[in-house]
Length: 315
Image (cartoon, rainbow, N blue to C red; front, side, top):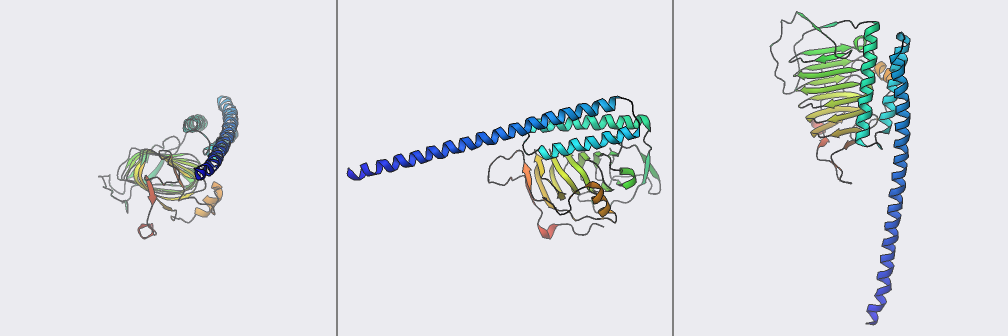
């Protein structure tokens, strides 16, 4: 009985210590939540004010200089969003990105009014080295194919083609690739952003992208690119050779694999300079899965490409 009474204060002390720890934990969580809310409020106010100013500028009269200024401000908004993603709710992130896409479309439309975009040409070539690719019948190799750029720059609705764009076609603009099947796409230049949607069995090699790369509903593809941020949605069975200065984000994806970026071409150092990316900062193996919330446990939806399986020679 005496021993039992002596253990009572010990139990009370442990219980009091646990209570204090719980109170401290809740206080810390509340403080962290307050900081996040303050950051989110600041982002929404800053983003909304700058977006409205850009919309007003694009809706008025102005020449090429005004459009270039607007393009720079849109890139600044994209950087603000990229830097804020870690504390923004997914809904706010998607809304902001949709608004940025609308701004870019409005900018492209004004550019088209001032100086219509010229068509550019490329020659069909035999596709080489595309994993699991099935080449569809194409016109005679010597024949040139005219392709309308998609939203200023890009390719859409092609199959079994070898496609390429150089620095003169890209010119630090947005590039969009959509509804492509079994194609090899080489972008040897510096895009502002890169949007890829509904790609199947494709191989995409790109120079440094100044801001974000968006991958949506792609499967059985191989990607190689440097960028500030990568967002991948509803995609599966893809391999990424990645240089990313923030963190890669995936959502509703399965069986994605990552390795460090190793592709190169003669002008890549100049394109790195134009992009503003830090070549010494690469978080290629840091991936955030929005569908995997288990703390301390790695998402099963992505993995690293084993070193012995990585592509080292691209030609």
